[in-house]
Length: 37
Image (cartoon, rainbow, N blue to C red; front, side, top):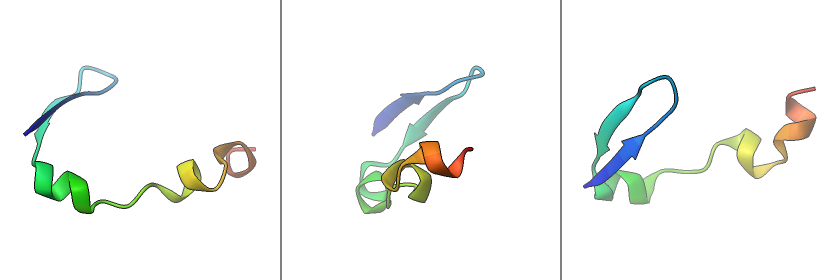
């Protein structure tokens, strides 16, 4: 398992197999600066 600590007090366990099959967020892949303007 992967122990994830996020912002705003978020703590969760993530299954490794599930984590390995996830796709990156479109904003993170395609340059978030342009999407967030």
